[in-house]
Length: 174
Image (cartoon, rainbow, N blue to C red; front, side, top):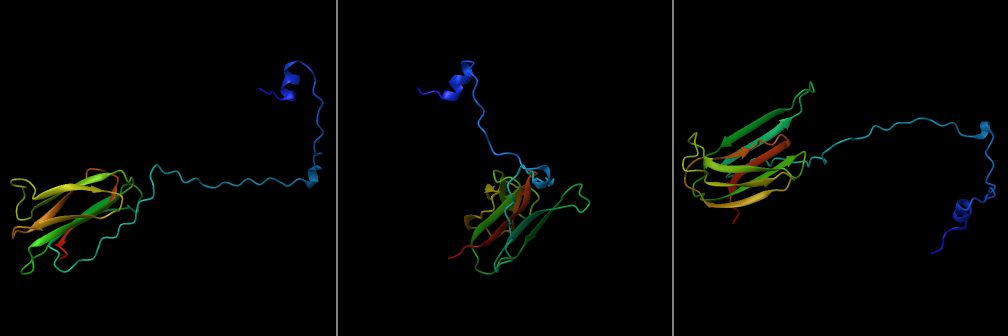
């Protein structure tokens, strides 16, 4: 194994001649250092994916939208949830759930439950349930034929990182 000569000479106690380097410039020729600071963006989270809630679509029978609005006073964010149930058009039988979510962390998922909107309870349980990844992608769940009852989607929003979430029940595309 080759050991650099300079290291060997230093370890053996021999003096090593100084290698001449460039001479320093006179003080007047050196640039004056300027202190600059750039504020660091310190965030524990990735950028929140932009999530646009689709406009009302013909034949839509249910819509649930959650948004977390920044509070102008800077103390707390203000959550709002809007739900709407619409009458079915004659002949509509098969439906699809379309849902999406965005959160401060893309590893967040939320649950949804499709329930009978005419009661305050889930009765025998939800008509359908599932999970939505909060990475901004759209979940499409074919619901098939639904009973002729009003339905709504309950979003399980226990995670405080959720920024926007929506769930729509729309006619299934043929």
